[in-house]
Length: 245
Image (tube, rainbow, N blue to C red):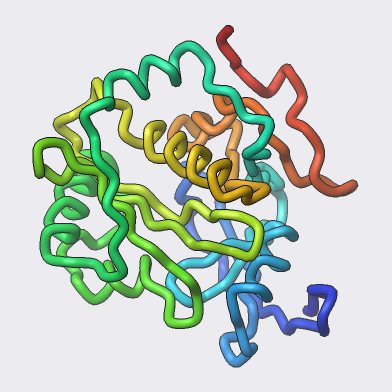
């Protein structure tokens, strides 16, 4: 199968069916961009605008036979206003400092292992495979940064962030599972939106909103949210969002 990027035709390859990581009991399948395609940040941005994501250097989008519940989501940075719960999250993390680094470290890997053990046990993600850790998060053709969130020097969270031409793409965030009151996943998104506004980027891409998945449903809590449908990107309907005043 092929897909148009606005530049040329891109060859896509279908994976075999496998268990869905979002909806247990469902079968899933992905369409992958040809690994030989000459990917670059600006080409990837065109694909992200069409609902693709990356895992390591592989670019894909869901292509399930009987399910369309993985809905690409993004925040319009200039229009975003934190709701009451998100303002409290920012206040609770007023002591957190952001440090942006270019490489993953032993300290990052140790936190990742603790995060998977607490948040994703038995879900097929190999916490003890250091090679898989780097292969999942790093990308040799992208402009990828690793955002460290620290309080009093202690590493609390790491957000993997791709910088695109006019957007940020939130790849993955892992955090200290012993700090639930901080809502570090939400905090990482809030800081990315804040940064995008500061440097006048249009969007922060959040990956897929999966309305029936408890772990992915949090994305509806961000206002200025757009979803990708058959007619393009449109504002998320009010029935989707659970926005507090």
